[in-house]
Length: 414
Length: 150
Image (tube, rainbow over all chains, first blue to last red; front, side):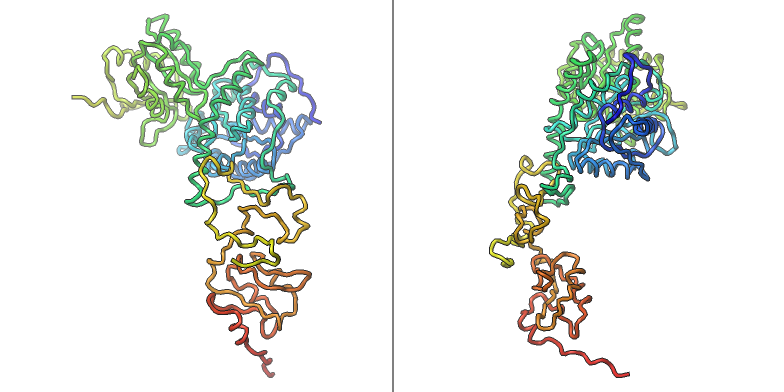
C-alpha cells in the first residue's frame, strides 16, 4: 500500500514537480518512460516516489520514447492507468505511436514539456512539439503555469478515462518558463486528489481472460474510414466531459478552467490569441496598455487545443461588439504556411458577427524571450489596423527576430 | 465452404471480406475484436470446433482463395509423427489424439512447410495445383525411393 505524502496547503513547486505529484496522486499503474530535457524531472520524480514507497504501480525504463509510448499502450490495453512524459525530439520519436494510442482508444496521459524541434538543436521552449502532435487524435490541454501543470493532469485522467471519451490526453506546459520556474502551488491532499480522479475502470482489457480480445487490428479501405470517423466523433464530443470535469474541479478547489480562457474581452477593441506561459505576460501587457494608453486590449487563450474550441473562440470574438482586430501568436516555425493558431482561429472568426481583421505573428522560437514591451508594440499595431479598417502590415510577421523585417502576404484589394 | 469435424463447427464459414458492413456508429470502439461470443474462461480446454468463435475471429473466415497450390495428405503412408502439425505456421493441420486427420483447407495458405518436414518415404504430404482433384493426386502418388547404393 502506497505511503501518504505529506503536503502543505501551499507548496513551492516548479511545473515538472507539480506534474509528477499529480501522476503520483492518480496512482498510475504503469509509467514507461525515457528521459529528455526539459521533461526529465517529471519521470525522475515519479521514479523517486516509486523507490520511496509512495507508489504501488510499476515503473518501466525503456530504450527510447518510441518504446516508452509503446509500453504505455501495452499496459493500457492490458487494463491499467498509464502515464508518461516527454519533450521535443522524444515527442517526435513517439509520433508514430501517438496515433496508435488514440486509434486504440487508450486513455493514456502524456505530460508534454514543450521544447523546440531540431535542427538547430535547442532545448528551450517553443510549441513545435505541441503542433507536431495536433492531428494525432489526442485531447490537448495547455497549462500556463505550475499550478495548472498540477491541476490539469488530474483533470486529464478523469476526462480521458470517462467511458464516453476513452481517448488519450496530453497536458502541455512550456519548457523552462513553466517546467523549471518555482511558483506557489496549492495541492490537494492525496486522498482528495485520488477521490477526484477516481478508480480506473478498464475497458476490453487484455488481462480479462474470460473475454479474450485483439487490440489494434488491421483494417483496409472497407473498415478504416468508419473507425476514424467514430474516433473523431468521440474527440469532438469530449467537450461535454471536459466542461463537466472542469466544473467538478472548480467545485472541489475553487479554481476555474474553461476550454477557452478570456481576459478583458467584454469591451476589447483589439485582442491577442496566445498559448502557454505567454498568456500571463500578455494579460499584464493588456492591463498596462489599458491604463497607460487607453487601448482596450483583450486576451483569448485556448486552454484546450484539441478538440479545437471553435464554439468558444467564436463566442469570445463576439463577446465585445467593438472588436476590430485579432492577432494570433504562433510559437512554432510555420513550415511554409501561416501559423496553426492563426489558421484555426481565422476559420472560427469567419463565421462570427464581428469578422475582425486577422493577423499572424511567429514568435519565441527556440525559447526567444517574449517581452511586455514587444506585446505592447504588437497591440499598438493591432490598434492601427483597427483604426485604418484594414491590415497595415504584412499578414504574417516575425516578432523578436534579428535582421531585416520579415513578413508575408498583404491584404489583396484594388 | 467446407464442413468441419462436427455439424456445429463454424470453421471457414465466412469468406473474408463478406462481413456485414456496418457504419461508423456501430463499429467496435478502438479497433477491438473479441475472439469469442460471451464468457469463455474455459476456451483453452475446448477443442476448436466446440468454441463459440465470434464473427470476427479468423477461425470463422475462409482464406482458401489466397492459395495457388495445396498440400494433399496420404493416410496410407503417414506415421502420425506430428511433424507437420508442429511446423504448420497457420495451425492448418488437423490432428486429434496424436492422429493426423487432414488439412484445414479454409486456412491453409499453401506454403508447403508440411511437405518439407514430412519424414516418410515417399512423403505423406505433397503439393499439387489448387484445381487438381485430390483423389486423382492420391492415385498418382509416387513410389518409395530406393536408397542409392554405396
